[in-house]
Amino acid sequence: MKKIFILFSIISLTSHAAKIGWKGNSFSANSVVGIGVLNITATIDNQTFNPNGQTIVNLNSNSPASATRRVIPLQGQTIGQKVRVTCRPSGGNSQIDDNAAIPGGGNVRLVNNWICNQNGNSINLYWNGTDWEEDGRVNL
Image 1 (cartoon, rainbow, N blue to C red):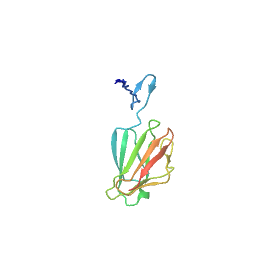
Image 2 (image 1 turned 90 degrees about the horizontal axis):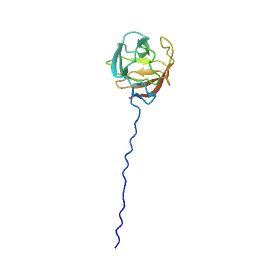
Image 3 (image 1 turned 90 degrees about the vertical axis):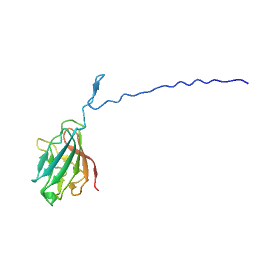
Image 4 (image 1 turned 45 degrees about the vertical axis):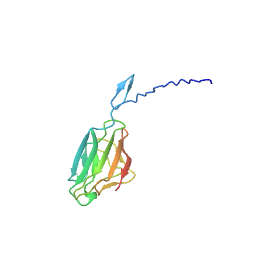
């Protein structure tokens, strides 16, 4: 009886994906993820907020009517920057309007107005260098 030996070679493959904020080998990737949470209570119509450096913006209002508490994000900082605006009402409503003019230049580009009227509703925004574009939304 003949014995056959088969040798297996185990090859370890590793890939090195670019890390957020990583720089090396003539490649750099700016961070597109914020590091903080911003809590906002809208108290006036057309109130601005600064999403730069934020991952999540929790939005509340002191008004029962969303149309009287429109909020507008200021310009983004980095192309590809993302922010999630989440509705955290304690009895108030607010909204982000499609085509709202951003102070300092740009617009908000949404499928339609986003109304913050239920705890947990959220919208994801993406800065394209000129405008905040909707990247998705959740309506509970």
